[in-house]
Length: 94
Image 1 (cartoon, rainbow, N blue to C red):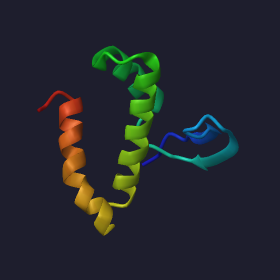
Image 2 (image 1 turned 90 degrees about the horizontal axis):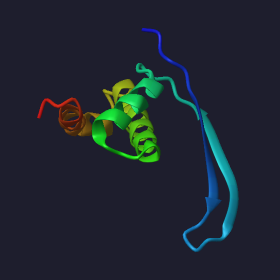
Image 3 (image 1 turned 120 degrees about the horizontal axis):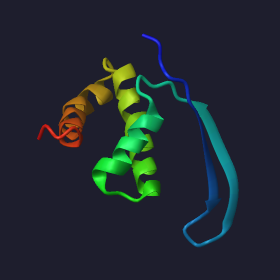
Image 4 (image 1 turned 30 degrees about the horizontal axis):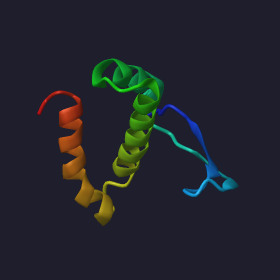
């Protein structure tokens, strides 16, 4: 199955004391979903601010894709039932 392709950059701007930090990490994150569509749906459905909707949707999709890609991994397999329940709540099935 062909996946959507994303490139993620996280910039560390300041620590919890307000000290400026100049550190970044970048990585590619293929995903079976259109994350931008999921963000838009989250903005409409969840009642979040646009920023919180984006943070929630991106975090959820990055996490869930790793679980899907590593379903035979013991750690990921242990999390799968919990993720299925979370997705049921998000999709309105619970």
